[in-house]
Image (cartoon, rainbow, N blue to C red; front, top):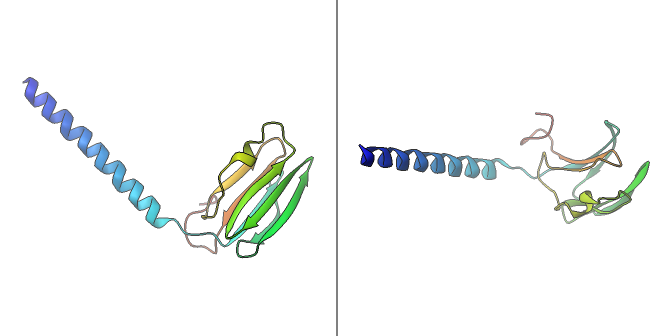
Length: 121
């Protein structure tokens, strides 16, 4: 009886691990690189920049955020907010990824031309 429970536990745990690995693989394969950076301030889109062009832009919305697009990646290099979580966020390039600065009410989101998963879907 005890051996049967252990065997069933091993089967259950193995199945869960296998399922998690399959999901992780499918998510990594289905990621598509974004085409543009969308800037949303106070819930409204205020700007859109191509990921293919290297630029640095200062976003003002009560406070300031410095958006850098470089080598197909977007990131916040400087911000006036006290916690600066947005500055420490990793660089983003895949459709649906976003960097949010709550104190400055600013979201920087990667979009694509309909391919891949984005924040709207």
